[in-house]
Image (cartoon, rainbow, N blue to C red; front, side, top):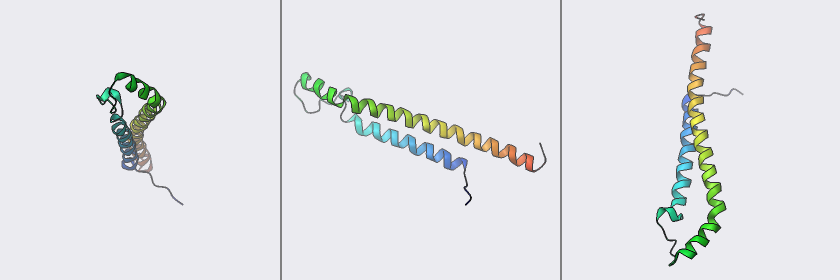
Length: 97
């Protein structure tokens, strides 16, 4: 079974990973105090308690978003490297190198 790789496919994968990170960040922004949302609580004590409950989730979400964006950037770089490598190999096959 032959596998075909295209720079567009690799870049598209990277774009999709970035979209997933954006989605996670957008979905979480409605529940974060820094967005100005009070979570429906009247006083700040309850907001602080709720933030501490969400803390582990928020830390994991931030880490995942950073990782997804890093993977997106690496996929874009890999796509460019793939094109350069393909060009060199093509030149070798044509006897230019």
